[in-house]
Length: 144
Image (tube, rainbow, N blue to C red; front, top):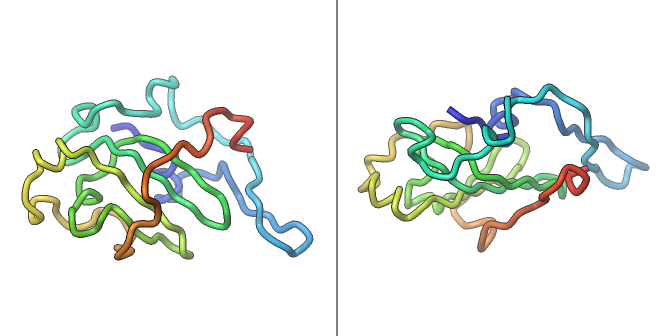
């Protein structure tokens, strides 16, 4: 199964970005070299849900905290697509995360009860954080 950076961060498996305070005004993202999680660039994303394995979907996601943003496409448990959640959740420390699930995947999964319990330590936000998914950065230098 392919693991996205957000998944790794959500599960505490990476330390690529840390917060540092400058002049006590606000926190900024600071790049810290870390171990590469993937063998090749192609392992970092999925194109279709059939690449993800049983009970997982390929979905776009976006998260934000302290003016730091990340967006990507990756494999996530189907529970994040449950229609009643709007794909929008809160993580620890007020971090916002939202998923955009493919309508065909949702039709294949079927009624609400087929999505199962939420597989991650996040809770429903009750409203969407963003109207649409967008790329937060497309090169290493943009993400520093």
